[in-house]
Image 1 (cartoon, one colour):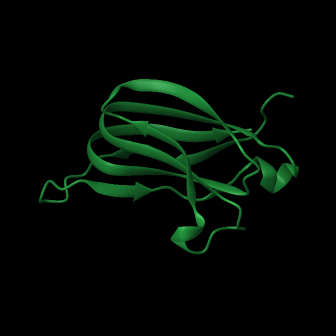
Image 2 (spheres, one colour; image 1 turned 180 degrees about the horizontal axis):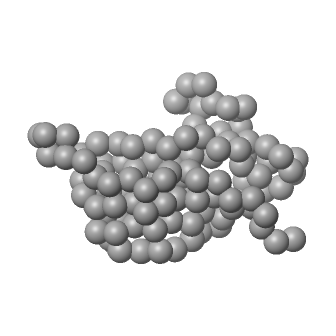
Length: 119
């Protein structure tokens, strides 16, 4: 079956120097994952585009509907921008998740063009 749903986990986000040059974290909105609509579906594809980024992209999931506290989220994928600061790529994430979200942790420079979830 082909993928028919695409949701934005994090829209274009540009590093904004908070004044002290310290890294910060950006958290995207929670979006329904494959198991939310499709019951036992467990394959999601995360696409992302970054430019000149220093920071870590973390994809998180939850089994709650939706998670109301931060400790209900767990990491399912981690991309270190230092390894490849200019990338357009995807990864498959397998799991019966209800919601997913994206975070940019230790954001120090660059642009996140997008982070999308498809299933």
